[in-house]
Length: 309
Ligand code: NAP
Image (tube, rainbow, N blue to C red; front, side):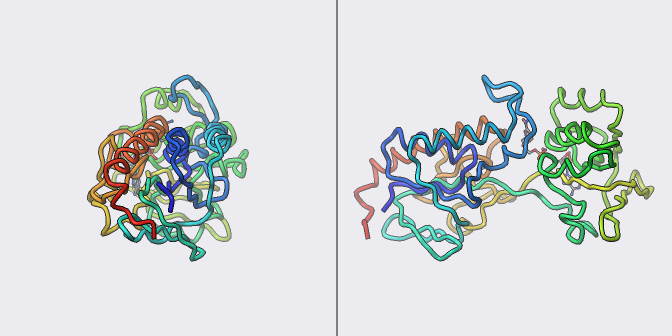
């Protein structure tokens, strides 16, 4: 039986692994994707992780992982399908049917891309509709693309695409962006980014591939002629397996403070999946550290009550 199982290999999960090693815990990391490093891999550059300016998100993720690997972390590949209370601890079941017993769980599964839920989105997914500019941007070299959203991701994606595409429309449903001011200034200084404000996406059109985005701009419909549509409209927490086990807020984030303690004894929520004001790679890494401190405290207070089988 593990002292803890860490679910997720993004910044929170890998930071938890580093701290779990330092605490000499018996643990493993379960990751959904082979060699995964979470959402950070999709950021073109990270300017706000202390000490690292202009780092590629992909490379930063690789460094996080290399750190955890160098300390001898055990990685298990699989999607967690169930977390079942057992013998005072938990049994964590993964997609291939294997399961692992642990005294505690650090749940750091992160979040997934929110869908637009408009006509054409599902139909053209992978044929012009994308959720990751860094992954798919190269397909739009010298073509036209639209990015939807007004947050850091959307503006970062628009900037990234502006270096490849001929023209980028940045489509936002309001007239003010929520992205940080520095990004806004960079976007507004680009000649080939056109902001389309107060515009709600209605339909993605195409034949075999995407050829347009229909938007309703302040009551008037218009079609933007584009080859690609990048949806950057936020994320939804991957918290489903803890439904009925740990308390969540109305948006599905697991309720926990900085100590990562949840309403479920022995389950700790770290990173983007927990309720917090600022979801960034630096706060995710901090959660990983804090969660292990809470695991140690919990084990010293409750470890004796957990049966090994
Ligand atoms: P976000 O901040 O939640 O922004 C989502 C954007 O999509 C908002 O502008 C929202 O509009 C819009 N939106 C939501 N649903 C929509 C819909 N159905 N149709 C059209 N537009 C829709 O998400 P994010 O940009 O992915 O950022 C998530 C978190 O990661 C944030 O905390 C962000 O700071 C962080 N992040 C940080 C960095 C960085 O620091 N380098 C990079 C990327 C992300 P409204 O504004 O009207 O709500």
